[in-house]
Image (cartoon, rainbow, N blue to C red; front, side):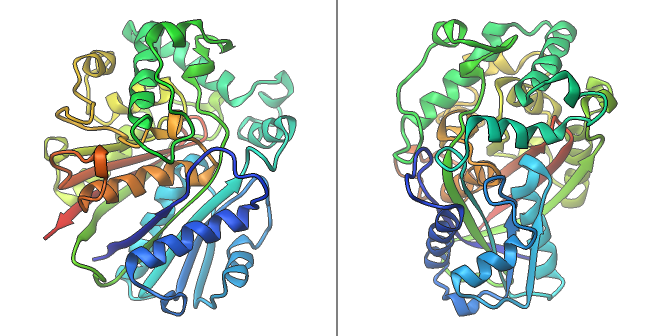
Length: 378
């Protein structure tokens, strides 16, 4: 058994003059304060990678910078799934008795500390060096290919995809730390600049500076308890050229394993925190995870199902699409928001019931998946 005892999150957007280590430190201290712990209480650290600061020993670099001497330190790299993969590993290490209080942290000054060309070059690594990279695709291009196929298979339209961007922006407007606070419409998304058709600018997450952290502990440290029920992973491919069929992707595998490990069903879930690097990502994952039928997720958005007051509140902070995306820390904001919702601390974003939360992370181009259930403990 393990508990998420504290969370920390910076605002996302521009943090002029802040390095990756600065942003990580800020988020880490917020998480420790939230857990009621001191730096000396941390005996393990898991650190997400940074494209801006690609050090081969980033976990111990941060430990030194932050002033801790853990008995366990490890850096993890599975793309956008890294945050939840680190949480899963922390959960397992704490359950095994290796550590008592593990700090999970990530952050990057990706917006102000890395040029556009350098960012594109770094992210291009997900492509196959022989069969894909020489053709010049970007991450949006890979997802654009997937989107075209998915739209063809299930009758999803560009207007359907736009609904997800509109919903995430509406949620971001209620969070002071979000990168964007201007409401948008489906027409705005449709009129935004083409990036990799059918994906347009507002179908894509922004580049951000920011940091996120949380503490996974063997014992509760405060009144409000959030327990990690269980989690599972699936890794079906790395490159788009090796990608399985749309009905055989990793999200379906990881959620099945997570349900089996916990004995929980989708009908038990009251709050969802789902990876949303692009609108197509969110649409596909919601359907792969069983939160909507094939081709039906957009209709559920339109009906209010995924709104703050709906039956399945989703990414109430605004997600990657509007809260922001600072690399590994981007999806970790989903987990921070879930914790705030589960402990009744989400202020004007608070939902009626977040007693059981489903979280899902996606790395690469729907390549690596982590599904996780959290439970509110009285």
